[in-house]
Structures are given as structure tokens and as C-alpha cells.
Length: 204
Image 1: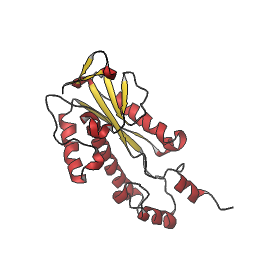
Image 2: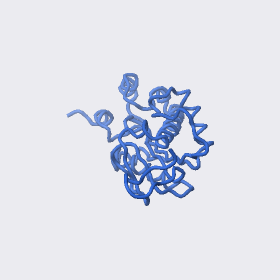
Image 3: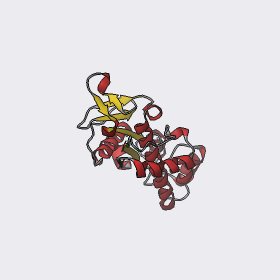
Image 4: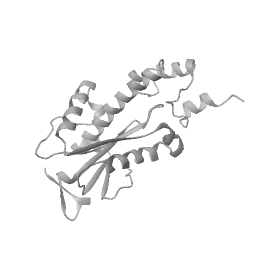
């Protein structure tokens, strides 16, 4: 398939002018939320694109390198922990998506976004629930966002040892909860999230 119909009506949009966008890190208790936008090259298809959560870590890393090398354009952007706490996680995720799309260095006629919400962007945009498993450009975005964020969390683990960020990427695992009870929250934790907020609220 080399074209997609704009909102199921009107003119078909060439695949080379379609960007896919997805985020990584809405659920964790720590670290920024990351978004990526990708424009795939129809002349250089990438085999094996899928929802990043369905791939092994090793396969994600392999595809990440291929996506960066073979795409017409890609961009990764973040919203910080401070922005998550100030705006809420949904709005911070949409802001990261907006930044990623703005960083693409090629003309875009249509943006496809995983989920049921779309960022504020200049071009037509379609939200697709389950889009990271259904459309290759969104799959590609989900993969490079996930690989980037996992590496970022491994780096945060070096700056904030003891929490295990390199293993769970900030998600609320039993090991993460145990570390929080021992160490308390660090600067990388999202204070607006209920588990962290409860730890910071003095008992009455």
C-alpha cells in the first residue's frame, strides 16, 4: 500500500507524506514521557514493524537502528517530569507528540496517532486506537520512542541509584515500590502520581 485515504474520503495521501506518532512512558511513576514521529520511505520498507510492546528488547534495538537509517524523517521529543506534574500526563504526552511532529524535516500531509487523542498540529490528524499494531509508521514511532526512553531511564539509574530504573523503566513494580519505601522519592519521580503523592503526604 502506497497511499491512504484522508479521513476515508477525498484525496489519497502518498505514504511519503504520512507521519506516524506514538508515545512511551505514560504509565511509569518516574522519568519523562517520550514521543516519536516517523515518516517511512515507501522505497525502503522495513520488515517486522509492530507494536513495540510485542517485540523483544533486542529486536526493538535492531529495528530502532533500521528506522533511523531508512526513514525519510524521524524526531524524538520529551515532556519533563515537571511538565507532567504541572499539566497532567495526558497533556504532557500530547505536548511531547506536538514537539516530535514539529521536529520533522519534511512536508507532512497527514498525521496518524496511536490512541484516541490527537496533539495540536498544523496538518490533518487521525487518532487510531491500536494504531501501533495496525499502521507501520505508528509502529516505527512506538519502537524508537520506547528504545530512547529505556536508554534514558538506564541513564537516570546511574544518577539515582537504588531504584532499579534500568530494569523497570520507572513502572510501579514490586521492586520499585520497595525501593521507594526505603529511599523515598527522588527528583525523577512524578509527584502528581498517586503512589508518589501518598509517600510525600504527611500522615494526619
